[in-house]
Image 1 (cartoon, one colour):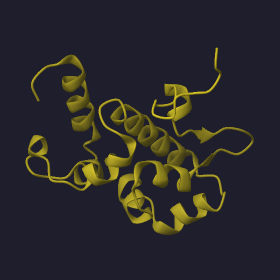
Image 2: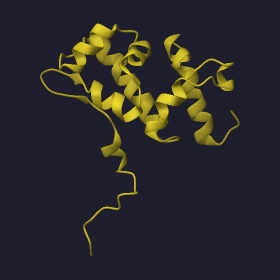
Image 3: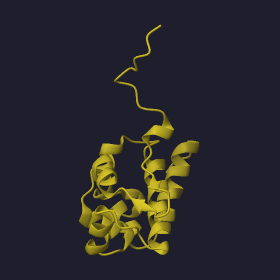
Image 4: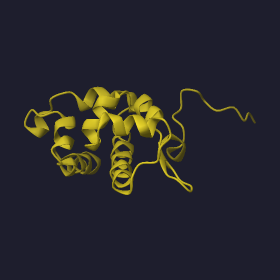
Length: 132
């Protein structure tokens, strides 16, 4: 029996997720997150509501503040859920595409307005097979 993995197969769910690193300090893997989901740092600032300077500090290894960690954890959860219905490298494009489910707003605009619950609702409807 071969122990090699099939390269075309997606990694196990637990291996695919981007995590906030835990320890004495909690940091956020900005480069890994942006690379995985094909987003740029200015979009990450829009998604989190934090400045580009803050995002750059996190990228250099500085731990986010408590409120920022909470915001980032929620963003990681949302993006992990999105990978259940689309490939991770498509999420960046999807975020910037106007969506009729959001009255023509882009998902990025929806999140920026503090309405991420609308995206969670869309995910629920898709996963349960209900019409969106």
